[in-house]
Length: 365
Image 1 (cartoon, rainbow, N blue to C red):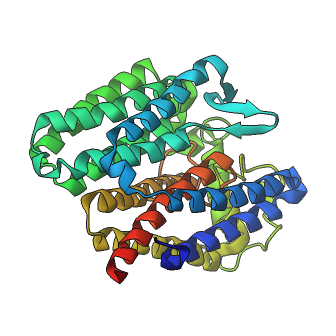
Image 2 (cartoon, rainbow, N blue to C red):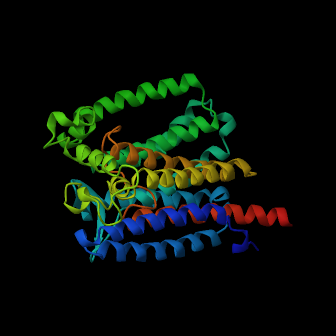
């Protein structure tokens, strides 16, 4: 029976460091927003650790061998997205949360992990047949349903993440260049349709304003400008913890979530940012190492998918905070305030630990 001695603790080191940096940043914002965010985040971290140990105790091979279990998880998660239009709470123009007495649950974060499981299961048995269009369309249908619901919310950032996840896994599995080009053209057509028929005006403005935010410095370009000022204002050593002017003087919007990297960079400076990128870099390296070390396709595809999931969100968040990518409202994994994201990420880590534990136990025996 596998036990926690077979955990991959090397993977947990960068996770712990990122969570610590996030908590320190939330602490630094306490004079501005109070300590409620910090207290709730600590509670979510504790619950996340419990969720990770619970997920690690489940034999991941159930997901690989029992399709009914995976389908039930998928149906429940997609059903939760649909239920938002009836019982959801609208925040920042997006109807993406359930409210429970001061706590908010965002179903899309759990949808991401469910999609990791279902894509890993689907391709683990069909990767040598990826040249068949039917497998591309069937796997794409698993993505299309939640993507459609997310666009109706509208949540552009999460839509980009799950579509990017699907494409990255197919490339990893071995889709041909010709089919990839056809998919790119189809997605391009769908994107044009979404631009004119789905996206709200403020989302369009955010998508284009990053090219020249000063053209509308008091409107659509305001967030991007303030974020860049914060990042640049950190200089070499930073303003110091609790002394970031952009966040503390309320110039920087959503410093606990959408712009937590800008908040961190202003207070920690270039040196702190190097530390930040080094920790994430080590985390990505470890995930990639584990994916390559696995002995079955499901394990490899799931860990690689988790890598892609974090990498896309990390790239878009940092890119938006530094003014090189549009602002889509994506938070920073493990650092931004948010219980749903932490719980889902820890559940994913728990499944990875379940994989590692059982593989190590096999080697020991």
